[in-house]
Length: 336
Image (cartoon, rainbow, N blue to C red):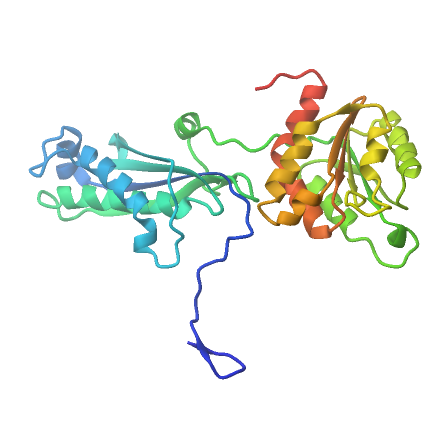
């Protein structure tokens, strides 16, 4: 227990507060092996163990284990799993049974603990059914193979996976920006006068670089239609593929970024603008007051994002899975 300044005692642990995280598609795959040895291995594979078919029962146990993760681990969030698959395969060269547990859901937190709980339940069941014929069993190599979704996107275990695992599970990272020339424009009367340092622009630039973009221009402009419109036309003619504008999307009299984008005469991409509002509303209901706008001008995609550093970064996280694909479509690529 920890003591607070008021003298009250508080627990030294807590469940993570995920209320302000967005709901995204999550998937995780865990793997592990039972080293069965020369006696138990053939009986498992030939399904001749005294207690019955160990691999079928392990797959059932893995399903149950994944669903019970929050009951087993006190700080694990209860999740409504939308997919649980458990696979058992013999590995003759090691006299082992290799097991995978794949879990998926749409949630505010990941499903890796569910996948690991499933693996442990499956392997313990293999152990339980095999121990009457061979007590010298070993459970080995339990680890997370990969996870997808959320802010971090795709994470792969450093030990990697083999070709068969890649073919079976097909982990996918979002299509990156692949060196696309990018620009960031901050719209703020006060920041343009030097009254405070711009934070939103640098955060967006950092995020674009993390996605593989080449940020070749970072500007701070005063609010208004024509300064921004003029700058955007210049960027479009200089080979910029993606421009993120931050600020000027609210309801104030000087919030004119959407009007500046509309004045360009380009193609509005209303679906992306609506996606920004809808998914940002999972962070704050104030997102519905945003007039976020997206316009395609020639080969350049332009976004008018909120001016708050936190909101701008959240919007870039929302856009990350689709930006590279959007630029590929502008270049004539398909929808795959």
